[in-house]
Length: 477
Ligand SMILES: Cc1cc2nc3c(=O)[nH]c(=O)nc-3n(C[C@H](O)[C@H](O)[C@H](O)COP(=O)(O)OP(=O)(O)OC[C@H]3O[C@@H](n4cnc5c(N)ncnc54)[C@H](O)[C@@H]3O)c2cc1C
Ligand SMILES: NC(=O)c1ccc[n+]([C@@H]2O[C@H](COP(=O)([O-])OP(=O)(O)OC[C@H]3O[C@@H](n4cnc5c(N)ncnc54)[C@H](O)[C@@H]3O)[C@@H](O)[C@H]2O)c1
Image 1: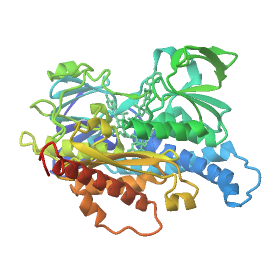
Image 2: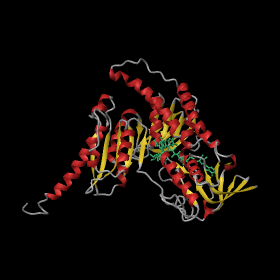
Image 3: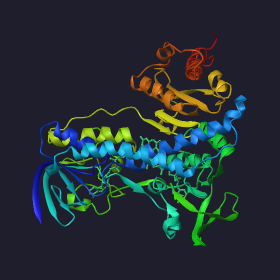
Image 4: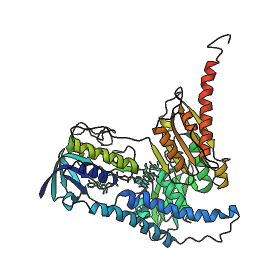
């Protein structure tokens, strides 16, 4: 057994861990990066990048299928599953290669391989070969797919996102369980690539949307294209003749039995804390066993342990993981003099078609009676119609009184760009008037944003004038 001492230890060489390592090194500290799995990060290996590569192939197939709508006849669509997966994997490997190269540039004496487990608040056991003593430790262990118990006996026919990006060819059929972001992104992409797909949701909410009007529009959009089964309960699943026999109960109480080659569990992700020995840290843990932490400093309690990335179960997105890692690593190096780091306005994007996005305060987090809404449907929005992408709805929220822009939920064409524009306005605390003073070109989808903001402004003003001209408040006026 070796014993090593460092100023800072970082557990996990994912996006959050790498960011923490660099931030701590910037203070000239002696830092160790500990990783139990393959280098390359979840984002590059089995997350953001390969999923967007698969979606890009699906978009190409969809464009060909849709071309006839413009009077362009592209001939019969033929999808070469092997070529699709070959491109997904080779481009993915290129992205992973850059990350791995970066890790390999780190001094070998500052990299350790193995599973880290706390044996004290300032001491980690790495597998059975090394003990690492460090007064400051960053937990950046990421998350893993959560598997419903009904699916656990399906062997290789139960798949998660990682397995999809290991395929050499596209399968015949997949049942996707879960209508969150992963379920919708991968489910729609596979469907457009010719795979028989059914997507099952136990509730009626798609991709974490909280505004009912947006959610209903999303249900209508995806329901028109995909085999989408909402309010459906998973009853059981078993293997019969190398096929999954899936039993479900639909909202009307009827039971259904169907057969698929694979079942994809897209049912949320769980923080990687199993076997981490958090009990040995003396930290206060919540009901899920996660340490309580300050999201501005990433400090757990008042000691030298910090947390960052998916493992903290707060905002499981790539840009948040790197921000949190930077704050955690910086503060680990500064400890005990920790400082608050920059947290940005909330921004979430699902790369479906149409895209779904949320900005700033989502409908769920708005204070009742403190806001007004404005909206635009993309059905008749000029540029969206030109492109035959005129589906969706944008709802924007503004604060009563101050007229400050608070946030938005949307499903619509190129929502990734609209969401960025709105997020920047939100972080700059702009008012609706200030946003309307900005230039809008013609003809662009952003003109739809302007329509929604004008509607919001009208509703904000209307409310004030209704009060001002209220005969009950000022009798005789
Ligand atoms: C299919 C999919 C698509 C996604 N698409 C997007 C997207 O488009 N945009 C977006 O913003 N986000 C997306 N995400 C989310 C994004 O990938 C994550 O938020 C981000 O990768 C989290 O980074 P992390 O550093 O917290 O975790 P990871 O990158 O998973 O790093 C954690 C590391 O810790 C290691 N580890 C765990 N336990 C231990 C231990 N005890 N000892 C040592 N090492 C340990 C793991 O092996 C792992 O390498 C997607 C996720 C998935 C699954
Ligand atoms: N574009 C992106 O930014 C992107 C893409 C993919 C993933 N991600 C990140 O990854 C995280 C995980 O994604 P996800 O889609 O797995 O999680 P999610 O929380 O978005 O969705 C999980 C879904 O599974 C359903 N579910 C859970 N248990 C179920 C069961 N037993 N039966 C049926 N349905 C069940 C939930 O109701 C929900 O609809 C997301 O929170 C997101 O932050 C982001």
